[in-house]
Length: 429
Image (cartoon, rainbow, N blue to C red):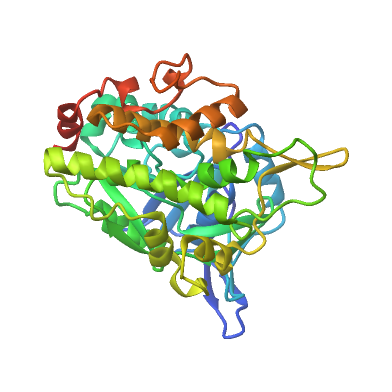
């Protein structure tokens, strides 16, 4: 069974005490799975996968497996659980403890029979996971990009091909939580829970048997409340500005001298960084308006970054007066720092971190592709892409054109032969 392991007595029941402690009541015997049992597969081994594994493994009538393809993560995770269970800590200091049924690096161990597949890895890993699970999907299932990120709809359709006839595909704009692993495989802390998460139903093959969005909501619980947005373009054109904008704003004028400490990421936002994010976001909003004007497609769910933060975090934000204050005073972001590397003399930025390696080729370049389709110029997006690709050692655009040698490594619509509004509309039917 490769690196997989089935844990004896892994089905657990729990309840939270008023003190926030978790009482574990082990089952005295393994029972046959009922017809109502959920068979859930979590793809990934990072922060979000740990939270999902902790929460979902604690559900009754749920079999939760984990597929992690990265290096030796499955082996590490299995080893960490040899003498205990996972602990998931919530912002109110309550906890749950549970253990996945199986953790493996071999898709054949965990994919067959999965009716809900949650892909919670950076966008640059989506292709590997989709290709790994595709041969073993033989029955109706729902695949969720959690988050999907721009272009997930193009890539999933391209890889699933004929199987897309019985696979529903959803794409969330973001993870439901701000979270961090405390101890790999054993302990994860949720710093903040979003009130709502926007989800696009890219393809619904359920034919009325089960609503895939309601299915996902029932599994995750609430909060967050899952909000169905109008179409996948709202996912592809929203939430692409924040990470590249903050990185560009913080490091564009960096002199190369190591810093004595790691700077705060969100809560360290200054006026220039906030302007960078806003200027990027303004160009995104112009693209939505142009597509809407020419097609009649509505983009009510494609919020500005400021609106999105207010909607998602609500009372966690103590000063909602501007985008800058929304970021600086968001309790869910306390202590989160820029991706840095320790070097002699201090810390230097890690430009290979997903804030660029994911959010440029699987974010801004996709948005640039949408702008090309409708003939809009995007000078700010172009500038940030050029800066980001230089830091990544890639070439996605040349000047303002999508002709770079590494464009094929992105999810720009043009990579999948989608070059006109008619092509986009065909996908949405």
